[in-house]
Length: 404
Image 1 (cartoon, helix red, strand yellow):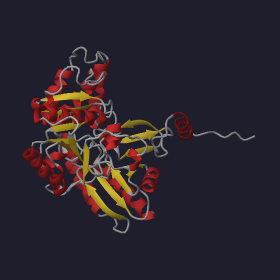
Image 2 (spheres, rainbow, N blue to C red):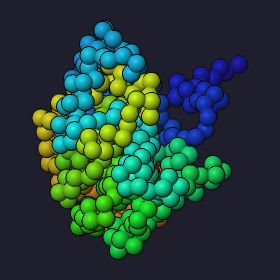
Image 3 (cartoon, rainbow, N blue to C red):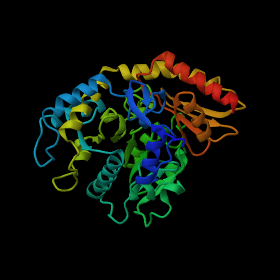
Image 4 (cartoon, rainbow, N blue to C red):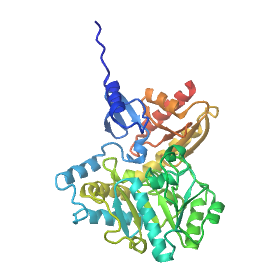
């Protein structure tokens, strides 16, 4: 009698399918180790990570400086809750605020929590400063947005898969086309307290707004006395070749919303950053989080901030991003209908195939990427990727498109 042996990959996937909710449809690879821009799967195959945890791994897997910061703090203190002070939060807050050119931060854990915090700030500021009635406060959001998956956030999404079955939704949001300053001008009225947007829409397929749009949003918000809330969770912290995607347009929002890379791919760390004129709406008991601002997260986040303050990640993203843009521009026009890139971030619209099938082909070639919205694939390699590895990944993409 022949005995069949189940591979480690199949075994792990079966366990996930049997015991974890099916809220994701991952590619059939089980990753066991990672270092820099490369990972090993459970069967010892090597893959180049061209997704970087949706920008959470901007500094690569297990960056030595971040691991050292984690280990040093792990040996001292991990959690106090905000019922007490800890000896790391103050330094983290001061240096992150300085990096952003702002006064203060409010630390949270996930990106969605940071977005929810920014929404609460805008509404409370509108009520206290502008006198907007609580039942009339409005925030303008963008079509094609992705800010997380809480019920409030999916309520103003236009993605049916995110919304269907989860209502009723929180009122007070109006959605306008992304990139259309005329429509935005018409939407902002006396009850509007804020405009919430991603300076580049990541989940939407790395959608870059028209030149001058972000500056127009900033000007409009200033003229009308409403807040500009910039969700830089995916776009920020070096990804586009600047510290923030807003920097490309010389724009400073009223509130930065940060996450993903702030935790170095090690811990969930998020924050909003603003002036004290705005942050002062938060008083004891108004908002909080048991884990937000915990010393372990602050130690890692502080090292991230210090790496960004040195500027090397941003320089690498800009330098290697020029190589990426050149390779993308050379992709065959009968296989690709459009490409969009800024720094080490790209969206590629595929002709004649699903984005999923291209990503499955890339997986077989040793490259990890992710599809979105059917026919688009996203590339977001760690900023530590070597130039030769980046070009190798593009070689694999060209070969996969040629075969499809």
